[in-house]
Image (cartoon, rainbow, N blue to C red; front, top):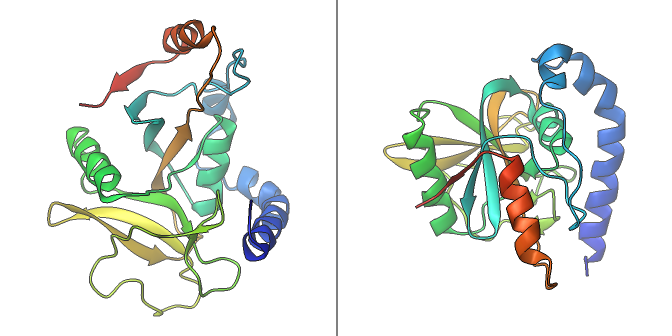
Length: 208
């Protein structure tokens, strides 16, 4: 169950998304034709959207490392949601190290990626907005997060000195982004069939 503060945050963020929808669409850094080529697929028996993007697996999560398009925090989340995903929420050092490895493998170590970390709406508490939960594992770079600008309310990550470090930045800045989806356990006899169906419809590159 969500706490009162978490519910308050989710309500406020939902209002923000409604407010920014037109802006997100009009400011998108990708064309309507490009988006149409990445349209979502049908749902499986698990009633989960299957992302139509090349994915990398880790545990119960699959990730899309977005290096084709750039957008602000809200545009990036909009893109992820369009494909049945959300901006990434990093829960452990192991997960952070895994993503660093995959970014390096794609030779994208110089890129900056949005995560779902934010301190909207109170400008104080850092949380993952997809859940409203506080950041527990942290990988801030030295001197981060800072208060150089009060509107630096969103979390970007970048490889520095061979480590994947986090930085607070203005939510309207344009960066690449990383999406994730968490697969739920399906405790039915059709689990195996569902997984085969998923794997037959998306290009999955499995992590080591």
